Length: 572
Image (cartoon, rainbow, N blue to C red; front, side, top):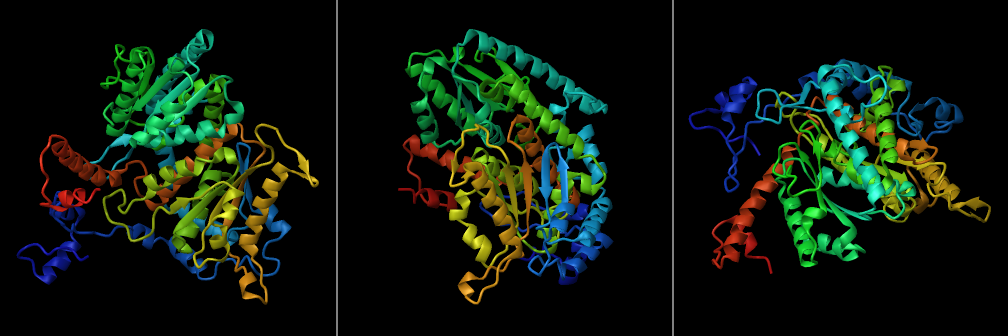
């Protein structure tokens, strides 16, 4: 839709106005009224991207990308040479549509976009969560400091201060865990949170069931759908031995507060005192930081974004309760070691950056809008859901850090399911559909529980891995047949992320690998990967609908006078 022409402006004046500095465009923007459609002036940014020699070079290379389907395109030599490793995770990328020239051009792009100094600025605690010249969160981004609690910590003042504060919380957590282990008051925990307070911690907990504490269970309530809480509460074996941990940085998240009150009411109706069962994770000094209402408060900080909070106190108490403090510490260690690996300036030795660049190649130069993350590990059943938030909430942005609308593609659509189940679901489209879907496979040589059996000459784990490796090669090389129904086009770019076993250290490293992949892609696109303004308009309208519901609950008759009331009237 073209911009609305302000009164008194001719067509020529309008064209001039569109080229004025960003401040002029900002002055023309109007506060959004949900009932009135107003178009804001869209000044396109990304000139640096479009004119970059590295981008121009990559566009040329993309006109004839490496063909994986030709004879000897994928060879043992290519497989052996196109790999990178960090923290026990090996990536094979010989099945991507790249060659040495492509990797060299992608490395030049990384240098051109100054990604290493941007990563250092983030880890040092500079204010990187911002849009220049506009109202924004204007915060540091220091999730890496939450696990920078080992040898040779970052010496930058802000990073050190954040790490020191987290060490205090870790000491509190360790003492609390020892008390829980000694007193054995609680066998179950219900974690109440939403978004990053649920997805990441839940994914980590489910991923490490092979290491869980005996006699402990963790349950999750996230959706404001009352059936979510009701289902969890009906499945808790002994409510009298259940702790409820409520996560809300501000203490004011509506969905979380609603679920907390629902669960508190349930405890009261069962004759239990919530004050003896409820603990919280919140910002220091928030309304929830109240010893009269909670057994203990663990603190999160405003420089920790929800989707990056799994290795902060958002994830810590639940994971330490359910898996053990030492296991949680190993998650932190794996994540920290990957943080260090993410600072290497040799692209072929920097696994997160290399994964990010391959994604940029597929997204921006081959024009592929989605990526499927396909873990061949049932333990990672919720990991892709977590990555959807990490990636899509971070990089689903249409303006750069100067507030200009970009003219290039940014974050992809992320989706996927564990194998081999997915093979019997959507792999048909991946192999023979009309859209090419880049894939990232994740697999491990050993199972977690070690319960396996040789059936017809191979174990279950070997069958699992054989399927994953076969899918990778089949997607890349394809197969030609005289029967068109049996033709596989190939050239489906994919890579393999391989580990020995999904233990706590490896899980932490895998988590940080994807966090840094997303951050690097944001740095390459010059967007702010650390805010989430895109969720605000829906919240605004939801609150207006809730105001209407309050009137209904008070007995008022609602007439369909506007879009909101008209839609609400259609509810059965």
